[in-house]
Image (cartoon, rainbow, N blue to C red; front, top):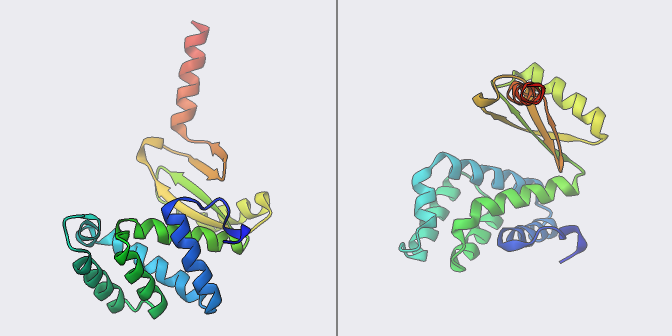
Length: 186
């Protein structure tokens, strides 16, 4: 494997790197990227399918047939279907969602994109998301992809994580700091 894949170790990283190399070799990076997003969405929306894929007591042929049928119906490319078949033969379908995520991370790295995880108390609107993305792009100096999450426990504000950096402007954190300063003053 080339140095482009360094940092992607572990089972999911190795499989994602292999899929990336295949997709690049066949000049299907965009198509495979779309397929990995589709598979991730299917697995996230179907807990029954996910349970079927992670259960070791279900025969691997049955798991493979079920996964292949669902993914084929969803319009997944032949390259990704073949990859899924190999993953199934190797008893690794339980890690398929992680493989898809690792593939997306490899592609983002290749394209020079940075993912920012933004957690807010309430969902952001389209205009707010676009403005935040633009501000982060200016601050980071590269293309930013937002991974938006909500956590009502924040009360308000947001927490932004980009790589190892974190900006926490949530009300929860501000209240905690205020409580600590008041305890220190007493």
